[in-house]
Length: 236
Image (cartoon, rainbow, N blue to C red; front, side):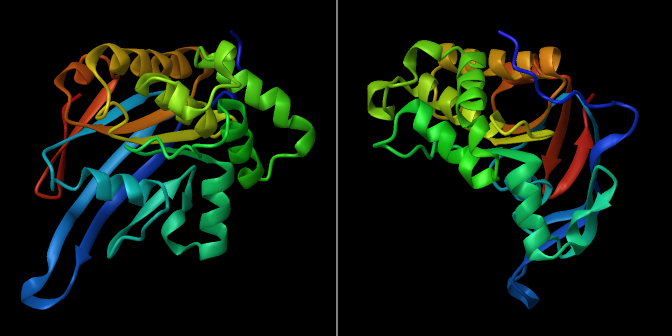
């Protein structure tokens, strides 16, 4: 399979967090989800954010994906400060440059695999002339070419997650963010999903950041950041 995603230069970080703090609430009831977090991720890497529940990893992922703004600090994507962008610009960034995968597969149940991926392309603003080409290429890449007409309830959990991945990469994003993408899968299906991620990085030069608490995944990724009480420690 040859899915022609745009290659990225590893000369400079594709995404950075600088002194990012996220506080929910005020006064004595304030909760500090992130405390001056810093990280720098080069293009073409598979990176894991690990930590226990409540460590701040999902909060950080939401910041990197322009889904939330930090209380303090800044997020830079390809050299541009995302935190000062207008909501319109941030929405456009998510639609065109980022791919997002959540714990729940979030597929439309009455749509086929193909239709779910095409729906993502419509939201991303891809020209209609590219719908079939991009959808079929993405589904082929994740190994579901023979299942494009099947609906989610006709698929295994691993297949549904791969449809979600295909939908997230079909518009050719520069950065893919995944929140606990294997949490609802057994070990075999989880490894299938991780193989897709490795192929995207090694063959297509995509950058992927995922959250996880699975020790097996730590052995597969290129880089791990550990989060503890809102602080980040790079583990290599």
